[in-house]
Length: 116
Image (tube, rainbow, N blue to C red):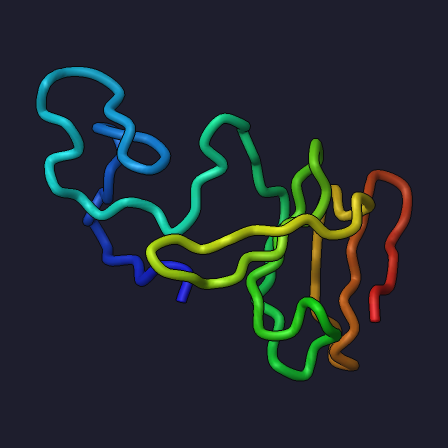
């Protein structure tokens, strides 16, 4: 599980960022739930994301996969207490989609690529 989101919970924002780093004031994170994964020192902005089912190509099957314009693909693996993220192909700049044939399709600014 990446995170079970509850409407209106707010989690740590706007009190904290990352793994419970307070933004301002003495209140701390007020006991709010931390994220499943944080990039901590780097800013990672997802541009497209997909949950890949178990029939998808390895090493993506059963994982959340997202693209980032600056750093390519990220493959999220659930973990305790936090998820882990490993890098994938750098051509994953804009979008990632699992096709009906279970192949992954990713795009950059000029092309669409088939993975698996």
